[in-house]
Image (tube, rainbow, N blue to C red):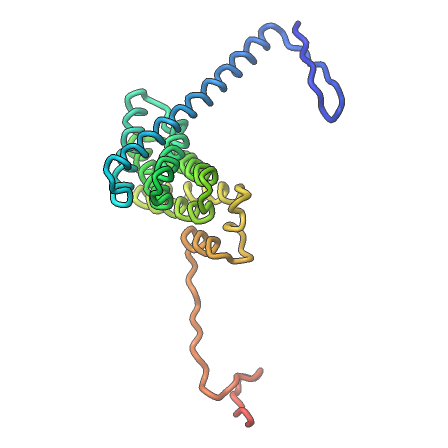
Length: 240
C-alpha cells in the first residue's frame, strides 16, 4: 500500500493507493503531460508556419484567408490519415493560426472567422462531432486572442457567428447543436461574459446576440403629427 499525503483547508489527509491504483495514476499523469506537450508543439508549428508563409508572400492582408484555409485543410488531412484526433487538435491549430497572423500584424478577426468555418466544414466532411469541433476551435481562437492582447469580445462574436453560418450549410440539427454548445462557451468566459448578458448592451453584446438569436423588430406606425394618444384611444389636440 502506498500512502499519499494531501492538504485540504489546512487539514492533512492521508489517502492510501494500492500499487495498481498508483500505476494507473502515474500512467494518466504521464499521458496528460504528453498531451499538453503535443498540443504546445502543434501551436508552435502552426504559428511559425502561418507567420513565415505570410512574410514570404509579402501580402498579409490578401493572403491571410488563403493561408488559413490551407492550414485547416492540412490539419484535417492529418487527422484523416491517422484516423482520429480532429477534436483534440482543433483548438491548438486554431490558436496557432490566430497567433501566427497576429505575429505579422494581420487581421486576427478575419483569421478567426475563417478558421472556425474551415474546422466546422472539415468536421462534417469526415464525420466528426461538428458541435465539439466548433467549440474547441472557438476556444482556441479566443485563447489566442487573449494572449496576443486582441479584442476578445469582437473575435468571440465573429467566431460564434462563423460557426453557426458554417453549420447552416450542414443542416438544422447541426445549427442547433452548435448554438447550444457555443452559447455555453461564451457565457462561461469571464472576459467576454458581457457579450452574453442582455444588459448593458455593449456593441460586442449586440453583435453576438443578434447573430446567434436574430429577433424580428416590431415597427410602430407613427402617430398623427401634433397629437398625443390618450388613455381612451382618443387624440386630443395639444394646447399651445
